[in-house]
Image 1 (cartoon, helix red, strand yellow):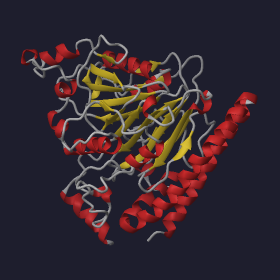
Image 2: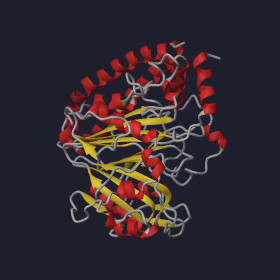
Image 3: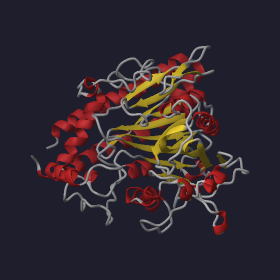
Image 4: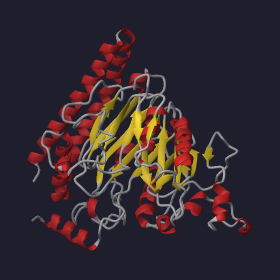
Length: 482
């Protein structure tokens, strides 16, 4: 057994993966990016089984809408249903991301609350919330409103969660507490917000409907529970009142939050210091800046416990990194205006860990997903999401995801040497795509004005061809690494 794997096994024995099933999200306002687009990015982290990612393309529902089944068996009939792209990790309740045809992106992060006496109706709502929002929301603001109505009607059954909603105009962070309380805040157009796995909203002003939404009794309930004392003279802080106190100071959150500030802002901040809800970037952000952040392990800092990869893979150190051993997929969405709806939403996806795999472009308007990226029936997948047997999670060479997973594992075998070759390959691959995609989008725009059906088939073929190239390159890399 190679030295790095032995080190990993020893580490896992002494330091269990507590907190490695957490995620990382970034939203940049349209005036904070070089392209003038809203950007939302997310690393999805989940430990446990051999989780893998299916990508589903779901079309619009018919006139009668769709029926959604809640955890307790209750059926909800949706009045309308937009089509969407769905990244599914079957067997876990809170790992899926959605991008609907209206350009609304939905991702989420676990955030532990201190609520120990939640109000739930029929068991509450959880996994189904994001699916309902994906089918119904025309924009990010409406996404918050729909989610808020569901929480207040049923109560949320998980400890706590932050949903990030974004469209081509704005981004929102919505903090949900177990039970029926929630708060949401809009990200300023010229700023960036980062969520590790704790609440970040401080002050709440529900009179300012442009920038805030939330439960009407959000302050009164905190007073009632003894989480906020008005007589102290301090302003109300949602994050301090509703967060699990230990989670709020945990280094697995504070370090990752600090790292985003350190890499993107002009602020000189230190690990462990309370950070603001959002910040203005040091310079306008390019998509490559987001790629770099989502691949980060604190390289070049004292927090990099791999000592520049000398002691093995940085994905398995005691310091919880942004890209980590449990990262299942990574997405960066550019939400653009002034482009046809069919190509206005551009989603870059890297499967398994982004440090050892490449981002590539997807459009939610594609007619179908590439062969090897979707298993089973997409229309019934939600109903069977939590009902998979062990065979479902076994390695399958016909599914693209397992090639990306194998490459990540091979890189970890000898990270210091293998990552050099992998980074070179994917840097060239991504740069080529970034250079050529504007020309392709001009072609798509022209075709959409002439023949929409033909244009959608061309867009679909474009995504398929890139994914097959990436899959082939992944297999080739795996075979050449030591």
